[in-house]
Amino acid sequence: MKSDEKILMLHPQGKKGVNIARGKYDFIKNFIVQTLEKRGEMSYAELNDLAKEKLSADFDGSVPWYVVTVKMDLEAREIIERVPKSSPHRVRMKADSNEEKI
Image (cartoon, rainbow, N blue to C red; front, side, top):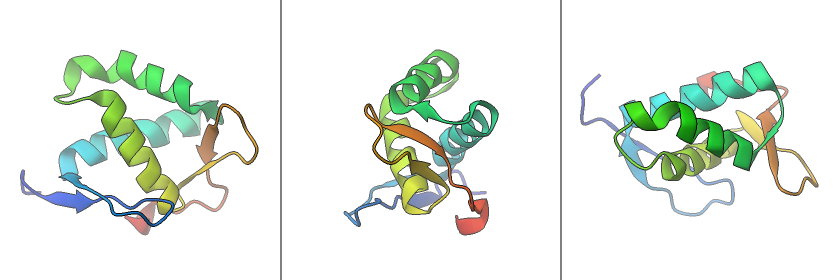
């Protein structure tokens, strides 16, 4: 993998996405997917707080910004989903999730 490789983020509502470094994307994506597979459904706030706690020391950048950006991309790719009618909003792995969509 080239260190300057970028990936275009998708948005669940079709809005214009941003390009981020592939390495940072993979790092945050792996954290989100592994966390949701292990813990199941959780609130976005819980996910974000856990990411800040676990990743901040080893991550060059704003962990909360990358978590929300990658989370929306994973929603758009139908890997994770928001739990309908949850407030505050909760996320979980999509039942028919296929990580190969990236």
